[in-house]
Length: 235
Image (cartoon, rainbow, N blue to C red; front, side, top):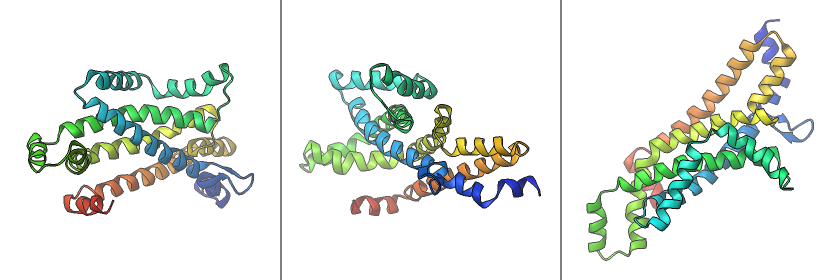
């Protein structure tokens, strides 16, 4: 039996995709990676949108705290944040799960980058468009909602797609605190087989590539201006 046949067995694929969900009721593998990645993407997008709006404000009371947040999290390694989120809360009597630790660290870290992307997208909107909206009698709220944000979001799409892909890849750090994500399950399979590390990690590479390529392709569909306008009008 070749190494590929030993790696690509049904039980191994079941563990890579779902962890021990069907044996012990514990989600893991790709399912856990996607759950962690997608939740962090949603959370970091919300945080990033708020930070980006504050960063684009002319008021120092709003701008400075947002800048401190961005500079603070962008200049600290994500791995250190994961360790802090996991080891520090128990010292204050707060029990936190491994999943929550990684989710909090990844969300706060990615939110800082998305905040800068959002701020840049808002600044990229032509001032002439804003003045035209004011001339039409739109309120500041309406200008932000219907003029600034749609254009800013369209300009942000390529950068956002890149950050979302990085977020999925960053979930691979979860195995360092024992979370049974895709990387950890692959490591366990490799340790059990012992003689097929190349095949195991090539399989992981293939899975990550397919997932991240799918995310990039979905976002790229909205990079067409006409398609984006139809989508935005629906929501």
